[in-house]
Image 1: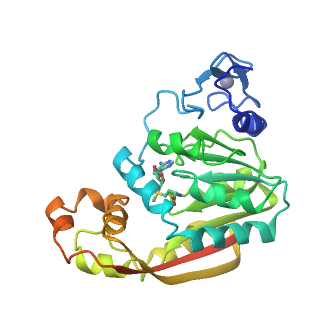
Image 2: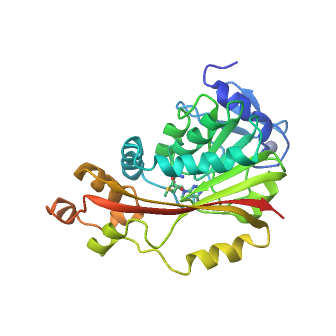
Length: 283
Ligand SMILES: C[S@@+](CC[C@H](N)C(=O)[O-])C[C@H]1O[C@@H](n2cnc3c(N)ncnc32)[C@H](O)[C@@H]1O
Ligand SMILES: [Zn+2]
């Protein structure tokens, strides 16, 4: 086995098919993965599989956003969200489940779900190289691969028990294809109250479109039926660096000036956290 193939990646190999020709199974070949037709994909030094191989991602977080997200998540402020996602997964699938986290970021939520499912394995997909570096070491049973949610997934049909999507872009048809019929799609998204205090003070913060829930329902409805929804809502106290990170980890970071962030008294020391977590059954 090559040094670069981490045990968690080895555990995930049977989920994959070749992104180029869809041949089932990729095999380790030096510091790469290869299909039987010879298509080759590097394994990055940091341990994730570079399945996107040269194609440009449609979107993804830059390094500064990921670093801010990593710091913010490590404060535990979003631990109740992680617990809700983990509970929804653990209530629906067996401990040996396969969990695919789409737009996994640093792998924080995937690691939380795997902690609640002691025999499970996970695979995180993201376009952001900096996020993948963290995701590849987020959990002993979690592998990571570079992939764009808007392209057909490099996964065989019906291999996942849980598809997790936390604050990330969605591809309902592909979610449905890769899920087993008994599996669950778990989607976490903000309500209109989420971080309202921050949005109120920083006009450049991206607002949450009130029609978003209807749009989510419309795109998921042909493929999924909601089984359980949990509202996770609480007040969180923020230090000033936490508040700066909370802004810096969102796309709004590009629209908020340094001067705004340095302005004493502009950033709130308390915010409302308000998200919905839904487990969907495939139709
Ligand atoms: C708001 S972050 C959420 C990350 C993680 N789920 C979390 O909550 O900590 C959105 C994530 O989606 C990723 N992303 C954006 N566009 C993507 C795409 N087209 N394909 C895959 N991932 C994408 C970003 O790089 C980022 O890691
Ligand atoms: Zn191939």
